[in-house]
Length: 58
Image 1 (cartoon, rainbow, N blue to C red):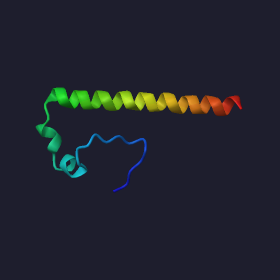
Image 2: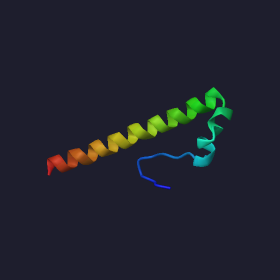
Image 3: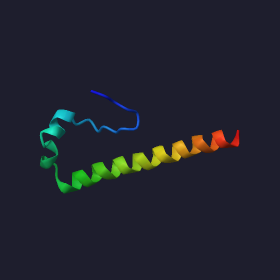
């Protein structure tokens, strides 16, 4: 399995997701998971922007 620091996992096995395990989750849980992933992605973008600005200043 290939992992990357910018790819978020939430503890549910990849095999379960491949087999359609997400279909057993309620829409509310799916929305909560997606919202958490989106928030984390925005935070990562902000951190990368800060790093870029530091490089540009120097």
